[in-house]
Picture 1 (cartoon, rainbow, N blue to C red):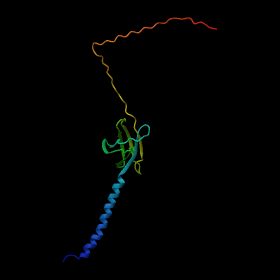
Picture 2 (picture 1 turned 30 degrees about the vertical axis):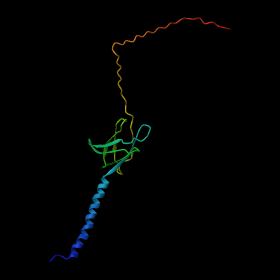
Picture 3 (picture 1 turned 90 degrees about the horizontal axis):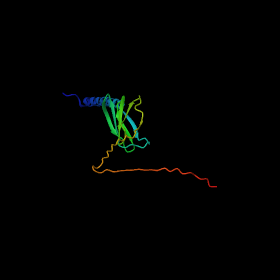
Picture 4 (picture 1 turned 30 degrees about the horizontal axis):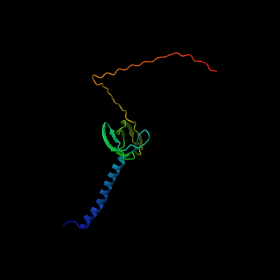
Length: 149
């Protein structure tokens, strides 16, 4: 004869809250281990840079990456620790900066990118057979000045 149905239902009623409690505790530990780095990327005039690429590198391996929004702001989910941020945007020099989380998480950061240098090479060639002749002359004549009174 099987056990009474009320015994099995009571057992489920006891086990379910315990399992739910363990799952909630595991989720809370994961949330505590995950922090977010918030910041803003600006140009030298402190104007926002949209679509700048921010990559967090830990132990030589990229761990997380994101783009800034139109206000130059970004949020990067990271576990607590020390990271090297690589920030790049078109027309600006790439920047590398180290950030480290504190006990309460990462402090907001403001990143200012400098303008990229510009190099250009100009080559001037002459048409064969054309030769421009230039001549320059000048004279200097000494002239006595007169006092007019």
